[in-house]
Length: 111
Image (cartoon, rainbow, N blue to C red; front, top):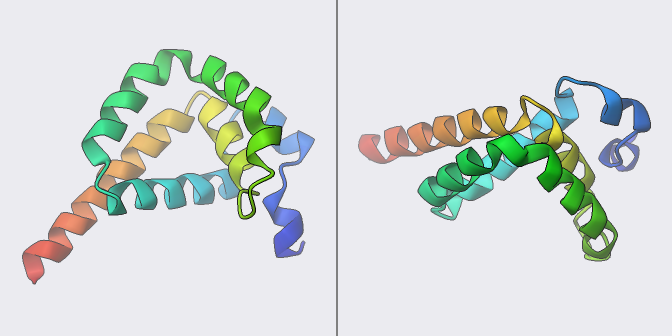
């Protein structure tokens, strides 16, 4: 599978109840971006409060996805939407954000 083919979400991946490896990669990248921008606390609060309605949020995101996909470099949007719409998706993202924040703090403590 080429990198371009791997960017696009397959119907089978969408139907799997657990997160796929590619969805985890996209969520990890999103978590690193959140921490690098200094949005750790607001992101944790927002995602924890949105956790009960995560599926509904992913469906709203599905509606806007064609408009977002016009922007170059947003091929991973489908995978992120799919990952956040799954039961364990938001919890996985929160864990990754906390882990990235801990790594950032350890790195800063060493310098």
